[in-house]
Amino acid sequence: MPPSAHGVLDQFVNRARGLYSQPAVAMRVLELTSHPKVDVRALKECLENDPALTMKILRVVNSALFGLSREVTDLNQALALLGTRPLKMLVLGFSLPRNLFAALEADVLSRYWRHTLTKAVVGRELAQRFWQQPGDEAFIAGLLQEIGELVLVQDLGEPYVKFVHRVHQDGGELLEMELATLGFDHAVLSARLLDHWGLPEAIVHAVGMPHDAAAILALPAAQQPLPQILHVAELLARLLTCESPPALEALTAACGHYQRLSLDDLPALLANLDEKIEQLAAVLKLQLTGGADFSTVLSAAHEQLSVVAEEAALELLRPEQDWEETAELAQALSAFARSAATPPSEMPAPAPRPGGLPGGDEASSPSVTPHPRFASEEPASNRPRQAISSAAITATLIAAGLEGRVATAMTNCRRQRQPLSLMLAQLDHFDNWILTQGVEGTKSLIARLEAVLGRAVEGVSVPEHLGDGLFAMVAEDCDRPEAVAAAREIQRHVSRWSQPKAEAAGEPLTLSLGLASLSAVPKNFPSGELLETAHRCLVGAQLSGGDTVKSIDLV
Image (cartoon, rainbow, N blue to C red; front, side):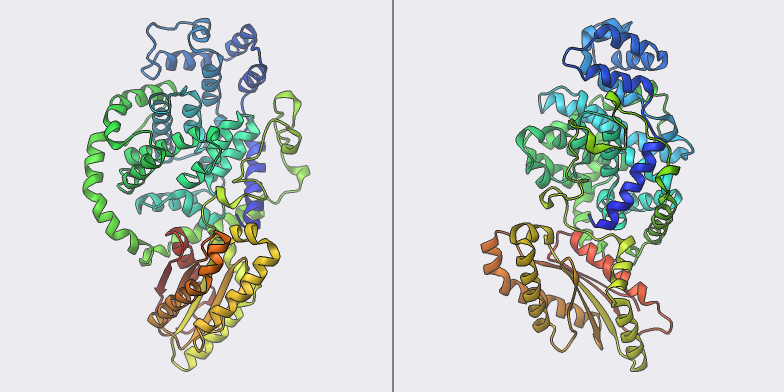
């Protein structure tokens, strides 16, 4: 995560701390259940102070979700049959701050709750049936993992809503697109907020994990089950609520990685899913729309999967990738960052945490370990490939003096009626190379790589290292086909040169390249647009797995 994104994320978290705090009953329940021996009488008396919450708990305990053999009529029975931990989980899940849902449009809330309730119920079923463990943590983690999305809707408004709609419409990965555009994703924001509320560390950790099998399997064995369950539950929820065929391919891969279930297990697993979701929605007094029968969705997904596979490679190159929604979101993010830069004295006081710890003082809590995805120095093995924030890229490139050179090249090419191409090349796994080679070793690697690039594009451009393994090449009298050919030549040179070094380091050395070209440079064409377009192509190459070239001809 770029340093600038850390600052913006902290602003979202600090504002959310002041605006959205857990109700008093939930905080008291956390305090009472934090002791090795729980005072059941005190816990019962605490819950009875919130009759509405008590009614919700009893109704969901008596629903198909729990399938108890006899009806539970009071808290004493609930405690006796369920135990304190599942009851505690229900309290945390049903005690969300009311103002978090204020002023949200009905269709936004409906989509959110349909997806969230589906994931929570599926997570509980997966935990119990296939991971052979209690389903309460998976249920609550699924119920709360998307909280950060609501915070972004509240703070960024319509630009974020339109952005999310476009990602879902095009079958994209929301977390990946958020990472590319904002510099962080809403799951990280959710985890930070749940940490502030004092939820169990295991849930905070799992909520903040990326939906990435490699990252999850790299965790210690004891920490893998809950992130695995959430990953599969997310894919199933996406398939069922968004009718998204690509989720089936990802779901098949995830099932293979975790070796817990197969697609043949799913019909039985989800046989009564609709009933359980509808009962849970009734408990929470939610009106749900949309959704589809599982067998219908699965059949349609199978039919469309081959078509999707053929189109996937072309999707990032289509003109609509230059989303208006992405630009609006970047502007909204900048506006939020400016408005959120409020002196600490003007910020609302954070709500106290159990044990008297202030919500804003994370370092003072010995029981909470920040998840690596939102720690200031996060291990590269626990996060997706690096994707530079679109909101920060223009400032970064301008600071490096690149916009001025691009503007000069555009003037020259316009006068001489020549094409122009801008190539951005990013060293994949750059953070891993720093970890394995050290700072000095990485500096030496970059210097040698710059020389290799120079030989590969000799006569076309002069490569310049902008920092963090990012290179730029401004190529005059070079159209898109020539630029793509040069990019392929760069990859061949790097592959031949780097093979022994990569084998010695145990780390592949590859480049992702994004190219933006102008076959004819129009008058008054903004140089910043060429920079941003080349960067979007670079992000597309990175999100395609790296070691890839993506290009666009703007004119």
